Length: 161
Image (cartoon, rainbow, N blue to C red):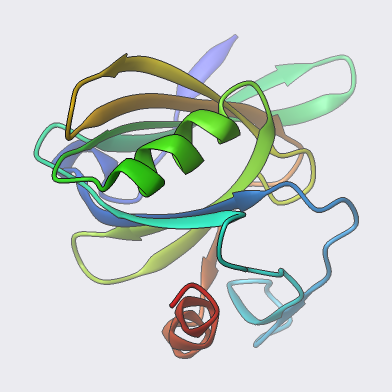
């Protein structure tokens, strides 16, 4: 049985996405006991292995809850359309295809969400052109996506420049 849950503004699209290769056992520490916001995140971002992409209109992200014998699971999906990409960024995104990644997604309200925290997400190139690309990024997690403190993002982006 599937039931839709709040898609974290995904229906209105999203602003940007930060992708990095999957890192097993990544640690996250929360700002509150309710596990509402990640205050410290042990992910590594580095040039050539991570990509910051501004989303175009039509990009969406969503999370759907399902239940099986192991308990609740969360289907996480990102549909990313991006244009004006350099050759280097298109090659990096192609190199992520078929591999697992972590994704930090910035919604239209400026909030950041961590997708693929425990198991990672799979990347597939849907289409590509001389300057753009469309990706399908999906995965199955035991916990819902968590909000990430916006104060962490500038530090991650520093490693990409």
